[in-house]
Amino acid sequence: MNQQENEFQVNVDESSSHSGERYWGNVEVIEQGNNYRISRVEIKPRHGIKPQIHYHRHEHWVVVSGVAKVTCGDEEIFLNRNQSTYVPAATLHKVENPGSIPLVILEIQNGEYLGEDDTERPFEITSEVGS
Image 1 (cartoon, rainbow, N blue to C red):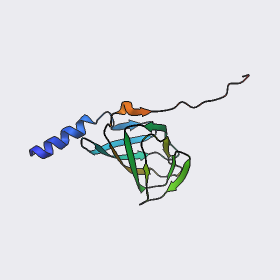
Image 2: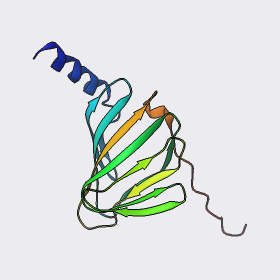
Image 3: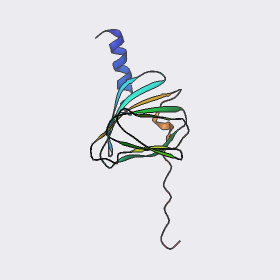
Image 4: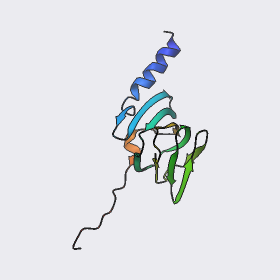
C-alpha cells in the first residue's frame, strides 16, 4: 500500500462513527477529505431517516436504485434512479423509501465541519390525550 492509499484508509477509518448499520438501513463512507465526505446510503423498504438539520454542511443526494421521497424545507419530491437533489445547510430535511426494494443513494456532504454533533433532530410534537 503506497502512502496515498494509506492516507485514504486513515480518512475512511476516522469516519467509522458515520458508517454502520442503522434501524432504517446502512451507511458506508466511501471517501472522505477535509471538507467533504462521500457515502453510500441504503434505506430499507418503507423506512426512512428522521427529519434533521446540519448547520455547517450541504448535501447532494444521487439516487442509484429505488425511489426516494425527499422532504427539504417545505418541498416534497420523488426521485428515481439517476435523479438528484441538493440539501442546503440549515434546512430541515429527510428521505424515505416508499418502495418495496432497497433505496440506494450516494450522499456527498460538503462543508467546513462534518462532525455528527452538527446534526440536530427536532422532536416531533404529539398531542396528549386530555390536554
